[in-house]
Length: 451
Image (tube, helix red, strand yellow):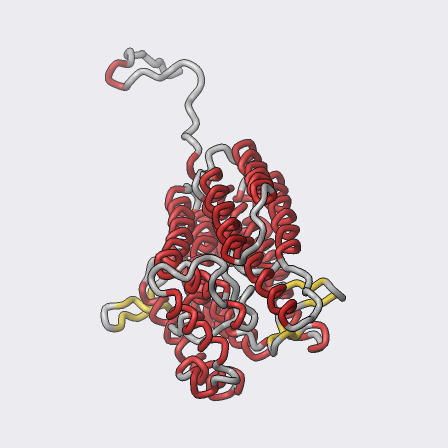
């Protein structure tokens, strides 16, 4: 499967070079071989450190990561061509940085597999993870805008040329906390209160964790102007509570909180109103807030069924296309067929993660694996929904595809934990050693004398 991913990525790179009228040389084959070698190292580490882990998860990640590198390289070529046309210096490409981040992410991925030999040990540090996760989530909103704000959202920590998004790591830490918390407090959440319309509603005092999650989501929206992280965080908590309790009432209550919070936030915050306005009618402010989504829709329309071909479109017309709108590049240059294939790869990744959640024996592992897999699926839904005008834009990035070191590092941590749980779920049951016990019907009768 990794070889197949390497062939697909190398072929895509050749198509980009041909359509951009670049020189096609053996260097491209060397790039493909280096890519295969990098992920082969990760594969060997998985086989050694987690030999029973699901064999499809890493190839799916490798394919998505490789396609992301190809698309970022394609955007670098477009930027260089535009700079040459207007007589400006060629800007520094982004793909070398993304390759470096990929290498670091894979090293972190291997290191985490070495350190975490049993996922259940994470439950012992649940409250510590929760405290650290909350600190990372709130930190950018509490710092001055000069070191935390980019494009109106206070979600960064900037240190000179280096910047990082703490929320990418806080979502994993908070998932560990909520999984550990729900395991220890499961009886509290399953205790029924009144029955309304056939649903057993929880007691009012048991709603505190969900109210806290709702309040934190609104706090992130207020302090950091980050709609995507707020939506992702509340969705993860709600799904974990539902999986732990298996009560539809929690979903109904959670969605009621979400609708109420959305209406309240829309009435109070101007930046959210502008997002919604651009979503409802991007062409009413085409040269302003609606420009990104309008260009994205034009790109999807141009791509049609089979796309313009890799390197033959104009995705560079979309601002910040390498981060928020990289899926629009796929829609334009690979068309509906290519776009559906990428979404199917994400679906396969999420399904294999959910399968591990179903198979693992301990409750903490079930909750954590389900939360990790659901996070990928929800993030893809939010990103794709934004670029296709299904929901308002949120600013989240597509996992493994978009440019960005924070997202890449956090998602490889997520995959490492998912593989560790998958390894535990697929391990064969331990066999009994020693003399086999005879069936009860065939056992000899023994007389026991009572002293």
